[in-house]
Image: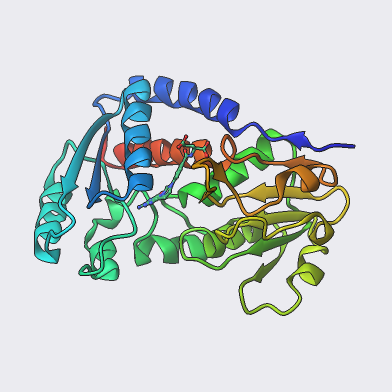
Amino acid sequence: MPATIIDGKALAAKCKARIKGEVEALSKRPGLAVIIVGDNPASRIYVNHKKKDCEECGIYSEEYALPEQAAQKELLELIDVLNGREDIDGILCQLPLPEQFDEKAVLEAIDPGKDVDCFHPYNVGKLMIGEPVFLPCTPAGVMEMLDEYGIDPKGKHCVVVGRSNIVGKPQAMLLLHRHATVTICHSRTPDLGAVTRQADILVAAVGKRDLITADMVKEGAVVIDVAMNKKEDGKLCGDVAYAEVAEKASYITPVPGGCGPMTRVMLLQNTLTAARTHGK
Ligand SMILES: Nc1nc(=O)c2c([nH]1)NC[C@@H]1CN(c3ccc(C(=O)N[C@@H](CCC(=O)O)C(=O)O)cc3)C=[N+]21
Protein backbone atom coordinates (compact mmCIF):
# COMPACT_ATOMS: atom_id res chain seq x y z
CA MET A 1 0.00 0.00 0.00
CA PRO A 2 1.36 3.44 -0.77
CA ALA A 3 2.67 5.46 2.16
CA THR A 4 0.79 8.11 4.08
CA ILE A 5 2.33 11.45 3.18
CA ILE A 6 3.45 13.43 6.21
CA ASP A 7 2.19 16.93 5.53
CA GLY A 8 4.82 19.22 7.03
CA LYS A 9 3.27 22.28 5.51
CA ALA A 10 -0.11 21.67 7.13
CA LEU A 11 1.46 20.87 10.50
CA ALA A 12 3.58 24.03 10.22
CA ALA A 13 0.44 26.12 9.72
CA LYS A 14 -1.12 24.56 12.81
CA CYS A 15 2.03 25.17 14.90
CA LYS A 16 2.28 28.76 13.70
CA ALA A 17 -1.28 29.46 14.86
CA ARG A 18 -0.37 28.13 18.32
CA ILE A 19 2.87 30.13 18.44
CA LYS A 20 1.00 33.28 17.39
CA GLY A 21 -1.33 32.86 20.36
CA GLU A 22 1.57 32.32 22.74
CA VAL A 23 3.39 35.37 21.38
CA GLU A 24 0.30 37.51 21.92
CA ALA A 25 0.19 36.43 25.56
CA LEU A 26 3.72 37.77 26.25
CA SER A 27 4.28 41.16 27.88
CA LYS A 28 6.67 42.21 25.09
CA ARG A 29 7.17 41.26 21.48
CA PRO A 30 9.93 38.70 20.78
CA GLY A 31 12.59 39.81 18.30
CA LEU A 32 14.69 37.82 15.85
CA ALA A 33 17.73 39.09 13.94
CA VAL A 34 18.77 37.21 10.82
CA ILE A 35 22.19 37.80 9.29
CA ILE A 36 22.97 36.84 5.73
CA VAL A 37 26.41 37.31 4.17
CA GLY A 38 26.71 37.34 0.40
CA ASP A 39 23.99 36.27 -1.94
CA ASN A 40 23.60 32.52 -1.91
CA PRO A 41 20.21 32.17 -3.65
CA ALA A 42 19.05 29.28 -1.45
CA SER A 43 19.89 31.24 1.70
CA ARG A 44 18.04 34.24 0.28
CA ILE A 45 14.84 32.22 -0.23
CA TYR A 46 15.07 30.85 3.27
CA VAL A 47 15.59 34.33 4.78
CA ASN A 48 12.59 35.70 2.90
CA HIS A 49 10.45 32.85 4.25
CA LYS A 50 11.60 33.59 7.79
CA LYS A 51 10.62 37.22 7.52
CA LYS A 52 7.11 36.24 6.46
CA ASP A 53 6.87 33.55 9.17
CA CYS A 54 7.78 36.11 11.84
CA GLU A 55 5.17 38.57 10.55
CA GLU A 56 2.52 35.84 10.66
CA CYS A 57 3.31 35.03 14.29
CA GLY A 58 3.75 38.56 15.62
CA ILE A 59 7.49 38.24 16.05
CA TYR A 60 9.57 41.34 15.32
CA SER A 61 12.33 40.59 12.84
CA GLU A 62 15.35 42.38 11.46
CA GLU A 63 17.54 41.35 8.60
CA TYR A 64 21.18 42.22 8.08
CA ALA A 65 22.60 41.63 4.63
CA LEU A 66 26.39 41.89 4.57
CA PRO A 67 28.29 41.92 1.28
CA GLU A 68 30.10 38.77 0.12
CA GLN A 69 33.43 40.53 0.79
CA ALA A 70 32.59 41.53 4.37
CA ALA A 71 35.25 40.95 7.02
CA GLN A 72 35.04 38.65 10.01
CA LYS A 73 35.53 41.65 12.30
CA GLU A 74 32.51 43.42 10.83
CA LEU A 75 30.31 40.38 11.41
CA LEU A 76 31.59 39.89 14.96
CA GLU A 77 30.91 43.53 15.75
CA LEU A 78 27.35 43.20 14.48
CA ILE A 79 26.80 40.08 16.60
CA ASP A 80 28.19 41.91 19.60
CA VAL A 81 25.67 44.74 19.16
CA LEU A 82 22.80 42.27 18.71
CA ASN A 83 23.92 40.31 21.78
CA GLY A 84 23.49 43.46 23.83
CA ARG A 85 20.07 44.50 22.56
CA GLU A 86 17.06 43.76 24.76
CA ASP A 87 14.57 43.86 21.88
CA ILE A 88 16.44 41.04 20.10
CA ASP A 89 15.88 37.60 21.64
CA GLY A 90 17.25 35.42 18.88
CA ILE A 91 20.18 35.73 16.48
CA LEU A 92 20.62 33.52 13.45
CA CYS A 93 23.59 33.77 11.14
CA GLN A 94 22.78 32.06 7.89
CA LEU A 95 25.23 29.31 6.89
CA PRO A 96 27.37 28.61 4.97
CA LEU A 97 29.47 31.75 5.28
CA PRO A 98 31.89 32.88 2.54
CA GLU A 99 35.38 31.39 2.73
CA GLN A 100 37.14 34.21 4.58
CA PHE A 101 35.03 33.58 7.68
CA ASP A 102 35.88 31.41 10.63
CA GLU A 103 32.46 29.82 11.04
CA LYS A 104 33.25 28.30 14.41
CA ALA A 105 34.30 31.66 15.87
CA VAL A 106 31.14 33.29 14.50
CA LEU A 107 28.81 30.67 16.00
CA GLU A 108 30.60 30.92 19.34
CA ALA A 109 30.25 34.71 19.33
CA ILE A 110 26.46 34.47 19.49
CA ASP A 111 25.13 34.74 23.04
CA PRO A 112 24.07 31.14 23.91
CA GLY A 113 20.84 32.61 25.32
CA LYS A 114 20.04 33.97 21.84
CA ASP A 115 21.26 30.98 19.87
CA VAL A 116 17.94 30.02 18.24
CA ASP A 117 19.71 27.71 15.75
CA CYS A 118 21.13 25.68 18.67
CA PHE A 119 24.57 25.70 17.05
CA HIS A 120 26.60 27.14 19.96
CA PRO A 121 28.76 24.51 21.72
CA TYR A 122 27.06 25.33 25.03
CA ASN A 123 23.62 24.52 23.63
CA VAL A 124 24.91 21.48 21.75
CA GLY A 125 26.37 20.23 25.04
CA LYS A 126 23.13 20.88 26.93
CA LEU A 127 21.27 18.92 24.26
CA MET A 128 23.76 16.07 24.47
CA ILE A 129 23.24 15.63 28.23
CA GLY A 130 19.48 15.76 27.84
CA GLU A 131 18.95 19.26 29.21
CA PRO A 132 18.14 21.16 26.03
CA VAL A 133 17.56 24.88 26.18
CA PHE A 134 16.94 25.41 22.48
CA LEU A 135 16.10 22.61 20.10
CA PRO A 136 17.99 22.11 16.84
CA CYS A 137 15.40 23.29 14.31
CA THR A 138 15.42 20.61 11.62
CA PRO A 139 15.68 17.59 13.97
CA ALA A 140 13.07 19.06 16.31
CA GLY A 141 10.75 19.59 13.36
CA VAL A 142 11.15 15.90 12.50
CA MET A 143 10.17 14.91 16.06
CA GLU A 144 7.07 17.11 15.84
CA MET A 145 6.04 15.38 12.62
CA LEU A 146 6.53 11.91 14.14
CA ASP A 147 4.41 12.91 17.15
CA GLU A 148 1.68 14.41 15.00
CA TYR A 149 1.31 11.14 13.09
CA GLY A 150 1.42 8.99 16.22
CA ILE A 151 4.82 7.48 15.40
CA ASP A 152 6.61 6.70 18.67
CA PRO A 153 10.39 6.14 18.28
CA LYS A 154 10.55 4.21 21.59
CA GLY A 155 12.19 0.83 21.03
CA LYS A 156 12.38 1.36 17.27
CA HIS A 157 15.53 1.07 15.24
CA CYS A 158 16.14 4.53 13.82
CA VAL A 159 18.80 4.91 11.17
CA VAL A 160 20.10 8.40 10.48
CA VAL A 161 22.05 8.78 7.25
CA GLY A 162 24.35 11.81 7.58
CA ARG A 163 26.45 13.04 10.50
CA SER A 164 26.42 16.81 10.21
CA ASN A 165 26.42 18.95 13.35
CA ILE A 166 23.29 20.65 12.03
CA VAL A 167 21.09 17.64 11.33
CA GLY A 168 22.52 14.11 11.60
CA LYS A 169 24.13 14.25 15.03
CA PRO A 170 21.42 16.22 16.85
CA GLN A 171 18.72 14.13 15.14
CA ALA A 172 20.30 10.97 16.52
CA MET A 173 20.37 12.56 19.97
CA LEU A 174 16.69 13.58 19.94
CA LEU A 175 15.68 10.06 18.83
CA LEU A 176 17.89 8.53 21.52
CA HIS A 177 16.25 10.72 24.16
CA ARG A 178 12.94 9.24 23.04
CA HIS A 179 14.30 5.74 23.68
CA ALA A 180 15.01 4.69 20.11
CA THR A 181 17.91 2.44 19.19
CA VAL A 182 19.91 4.70 16.89
CA THR A 183 22.44 4.01 14.18
CA ILE A 184 24.25 6.82 12.39
CA CYS A 185 25.61 6.06 8.91
CA HIS A 186 27.64 8.21 6.55
CA SER A 187 29.71 8.24 3.38
CA ARG A 188 32.25 5.76 4.78
CA THR A 189 29.64 3.21 5.80
CA PRO A 190 30.23 0.12 3.69
CA ASP A 191 27.01 -1.33 2.28
CA LEU A 192 24.73 1.48 3.33
CA GLY A 193 21.67 -0.46 2.18
CA ALA A 194 22.39 -3.30 4.58
CA VAL A 195 22.05 -0.81 7.45
CA THR A 196 19.16 1.28 6.12
CA ARG A 197 17.11 -1.89 5.48
CA GLN A 198 17.10 -2.44 9.25
CA ALA A 199 15.44 0.90 9.89
CA ASP A 200 11.93 1.18 11.30
CA ILE A 201 12.44 4.93 10.99
CA LEU A 202 14.89 6.14 8.37
CA VAL A 203 16.11 9.74 8.33
CA ALA A 204 18.03 10.83 5.24
CA ALA A 205 20.16 13.94 5.71
CA VAL A 206 22.99 13.81 3.22
CA GLY A 207 22.28 16.08 0.27
CA LYS A 208 22.57 13.52 -2.52
CA ARG A 209 19.66 13.06 -4.86
CA ASP A 210 18.26 9.49 -5.19
CA LEU A 211 20.68 8.20 -2.55
CA ILE A 212 17.91 6.19 -0.88
CA THR A 213 16.25 3.81 -3.33
CA ALA A 214 13.40 1.38 -2.67
CA ASP A 215 15.72 -1.62 -2.28
CA MET A 216 17.35 0.17 0.70
CA VAL A 217 14.08 0.52 2.60
CA LYS A 218 12.28 -2.07 4.70
CA GLU A 219 8.62 -2.68 3.86
CA GLY A 220 6.49 -0.45 6.10
CA ALA A 221 9.34 1.80 7.28
CA VAL A 222 8.81 5.48 8.14
CA VAL A 223 10.97 7.55 5.78
CA ILE A 224 11.93 11.11 6.66
CA ASP A 225 13.73 13.12 4.00
CA VAL A 226 15.53 16.12 5.43
CA ALA A 227 17.64 16.96 2.41
CA MET A 228 17.12 19.89 0.08
CA ASN A 229 18.69 19.34 -3.33
CA LYS A 230 18.04 21.17 -6.55
CA LYS A 231 17.17 19.36 -9.77
CA GLU A 232 18.26 20.50 -13.25
CA ASP A 233 14.88 22.16 -13.71
CA GLY A 234 15.37 24.16 -10.51
CA LYS A 235 12.81 22.18 -8.52
CA LEU A 236 13.62 20.87 -5.06
CA CYS A 237 14.13 17.24 -4.18
CA GLY A 238 15.51 15.31 -1.23
CA ASP A 239 17.78 12.28 -0.84
CA VAL A 240 14.99 9.76 -1.29
CA ALA A 241 13.83 8.37 -4.63
CA TYR A 242 10.36 9.45 -3.65
CA ALA A 243 8.05 7.66 -6.09
CA GLU A 244 9.48 4.18 -5.61
CA VAL A 245 10.09 4.50 -1.87
CA ALA A 246 6.54 5.79 -1.31
CA GLU A 247 5.29 2.41 -2.59
CA LYS A 248 7.13 0.59 0.17
CA ALA A 249 7.12 2.95 3.18
CA SER A 250 4.26 3.35 5.66
CA TYR A 251 4.88 7.09 6.04
CA ILE A 252 7.02 9.46 3.99
CA THR A 253 7.84 13.17 4.00
CA PRO A 254 7.73 15.01 0.68
CA VAL A 255 10.29 17.57 -0.51
CA PRO A 256 9.18 20.34 -0.59
CA GLY A 257 6.39 20.42 1.97
CA GLY A 258 7.92 18.15 4.62
CA CYS A 259 10.87 19.00 6.82
CA GLY A 260 11.51 22.49 5.41
CA PRO A 261 8.39 24.23 6.74
CA MET A 262 8.79 22.49 10.10
CA THR A 263 12.41 23.66 10.38
CA ARG A 264 11.15 27.21 10.09
CA VAL A 265 8.47 26.64 12.71
CA MET A 266 11.03 25.41 15.21
CA LEU A 267 13.00 28.61 14.70
CA LEU A 268 9.90 30.56 15.71
CA GLN A 269 9.43 28.23 18.68
CA ASN A 270 13.02 28.82 19.79
CA THR A 271 12.58 32.58 19.45
CA LEU A 272 9.51 32.33 21.70
CA THR A 273 11.49 30.25 24.20
CA ALA A 274 14.29 32.84 24.15
CA ALA A 275 11.82 35.69 24.73
CA ARG A 276 10.40 33.85 27.74
CA THR A 277 13.84 33.28 29.25
CA HIS A 278 14.47 37.00 28.74
CA GLY A 279 11.45 37.70 30.94
CA LYS A 280 9.04 38.77 28.21
N1 LIG B 1 22.05 29.24 10.37
C1 LIG B 1 21.30 28.53 9.52
N2 LIG B 1 20.20 27.89 9.99
C2 LIG B 1 19.41 27.17 9.14
O1 LIG B 1 18.41 26.58 9.59
C3 LIG B 1 19.75 27.12 7.74
C4 LIG B 1 20.90 27.81 7.33
N3 LIG B 1 21.66 28.47 8.24
N4 LIG B 1 21.27 27.79 6.04
C5 LIG B 1 20.43 27.21 5.02
C6 LIG B 1 19.65 26.04 5.55
C7 LIG B 1 18.49 25.65 4.67
N5 LIG B 1 17.32 25.79 5.48
C8 LIG B 1 16.00 25.65 5.02
C9 LIG B 1 14.92 25.64 5.86
C10 LIG B 1 13.63 25.57 5.37
C11 LIG B 1 13.39 25.48 4.03
C12 LIG B 1 12.00 25.41 3.52
O2 LIG B 1 11.10 25.93 4.11
N6 LIG B 1 11.75 24.74 2.38
C13 LIG B 1 10.43 24.63 1.78
C14 LIG B 1 10.45 25.11 0.34
C15 LIG B 1 10.93 26.51 0.20
C16 LIG B 1 10.86 26.94 -1.25
O3 LIG B 1 9.77 26.86 -1.82
O4 LIG B 1 11.87 27.34 -1.80
C17 LIG B 1 9.96 23.19 1.77
O5 LIG B 1 10.79 22.30 1.94
O6 LIG B 1 8.78 22.97 1.59
C18 LIG B 1 14.47 25.46 3.17
C19 LIG B 1 15.75 25.54 3.66
C20 LIG B 1 17.70 26.24 6.70
N7 LIG B 1 19.01 26.42 6.81
